[in-house]
Image (cartoon, rainbow, N blue to C red; front, side, top):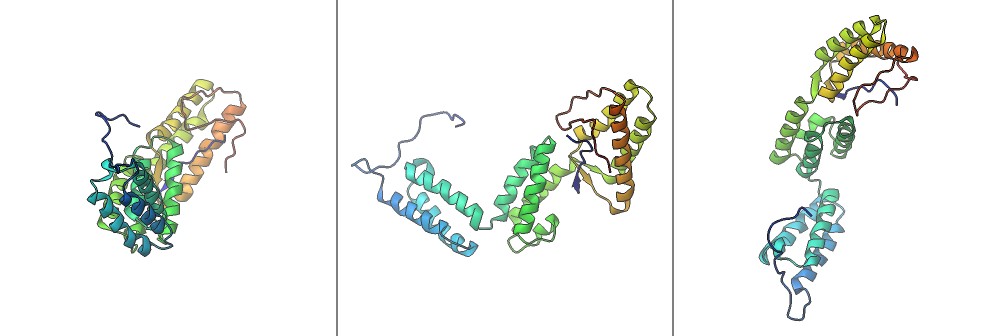
Length: 251
């Protein structure tokens, strides 16, 4: 699967009052808070996943034993935030990292977040030494939770992906129409159809057997669009995803 080609250059307020947190009579935070902060520091000094995974259960249990995070003093909240950062960097928690990607792509409606998703997925795939994104299901760190997230991501992607055959057919048809245009209105109508693909989809489900024809069809549309711009046709299509330029480069 690949991104659709851009062929042209260019405190949520919660109800109720805040709970009174645990303090000593002197106004100082309870002793366990200092122990928690020290434990977080030790966990963040870990250099491998086994180390931080071994230390975290005791830290989580410490918070639970003292009434949970809602009742914890400020330093514990700060420590928890720091722990989460360290955990993400060290623990190799695939489900957690995939959860971030899920939010990105499932809420995505533009090329900006689609590109961000693709780049972050490449980084994650390399981090876990997977041959490709699909192989994240089989890495040693994979869990039922991470596989469930991958399933949800796949469902989100299916709604944002056009099949290779459908994309090729649409692109070739638009090319035929666009390249035959002799006036501005015809050109604008054909270009709007082209932009509609970008508005409806963010990715193409690639097919190696159609790659050569697809590239040729894309290049043809690009060149005919560039020719229209050079002739002075004013193409004004409302789309935040694309930026038209007379100096379009088509290969």
